[in-house]
Length: 493
Image (cartoon, rainbow, N blue to C red; front, top):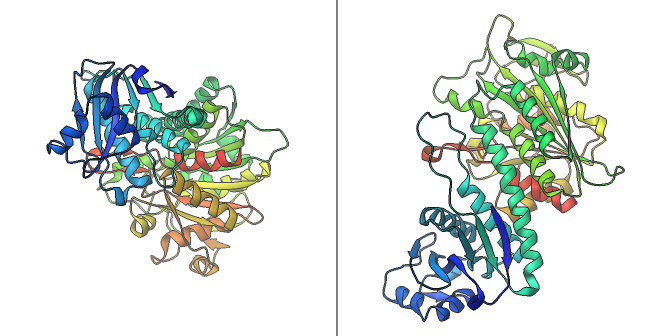
């Protein structure tokens, strides 16, 4: 897909389809009014005639205009009073979906030049590229029938004044990188667990390194993991026939003296719950328990696609949590890489057991900050639903930066309490601490467990259990929180 900033006068532009927004009441913004004048008032007449109500996300295609602008796609923007970042993104998503159905090979978003409160030209353009990327994404399904035809849309422009063209071009470039990274995350998350194994993830990381010169990959097998003393990580994979992998992806886009940000992603490629087995209903969704790992892959792919001037390291402990005669049992005590011992009271609280060893391993990079990303707890889904990612941090500046990135991109996270009281339920008579407490405050207790391994680190924990995938008719990976992580890292570049 080619994206470009269009700063020429509308009369000089040729396009298959112009995308223009209209508010309720027929209110036309400057770009829409300009187009309407070019079309002899046709847009205003259609709105006045009641053929288009302008509700948010509603679309109407005006085909075969027989002019340099072949079609016009009207997009409802809703009431002017409620017009904001969220409604702008909803309008873009609706427009992108309608564009793919109309057969246009190229399109010009006049909508992208309309003012949106607290959204500058860079983000307006970036969101256009992200919306097109999401609309054109196709799940890597394994169906044997005929595949749907590829979208005809190949070229997308955003109208802008000449003075803002550089900001628009930059936004489109970054949005395209985010869309590419999000596609990587979604592809990995949507693959079945008999395909996307720990070995597959390791090989995929190597493939990314071959495609992007800025990436360097190291994949450690079980003997190397054992020599590192990662007894907590290995306790989770003990019952599986699939060998574990510790995947390290380095991206160096800044100077060698710049400390990297380390991203640690939970990579449970399938989670039965182990001996503390999960209910059968919905267990198919446990192929998505590597959503944190997939988001690390996607974020680093986005940075490398762009050539971002930032240093980042991705660390992914990848394994299955399965049952067998070798599986870890409730009550077993394991020793983490940090030297601390853990009583495993519930084998379904396995994500924290692999993350804690990966966090300890990350210390060798002397990170400027460390962010772990994990589909960690059902309790976070209960607390925040599918809208917000849960955020815990021991550093206010880091937490504020992540919250701000979420607000800017619409990939929202919500800061949760990190208090010593949430570590109290982890006390054990048989080890330094247990891996679970009671039911109350489960997401906060899980964060409290990870907190025990972060002394001296600027650390944040993102629980994406509710946001990493979509349900219902759109069942599949959401690609979150790649937009948030990319934006956070680019602000550091």
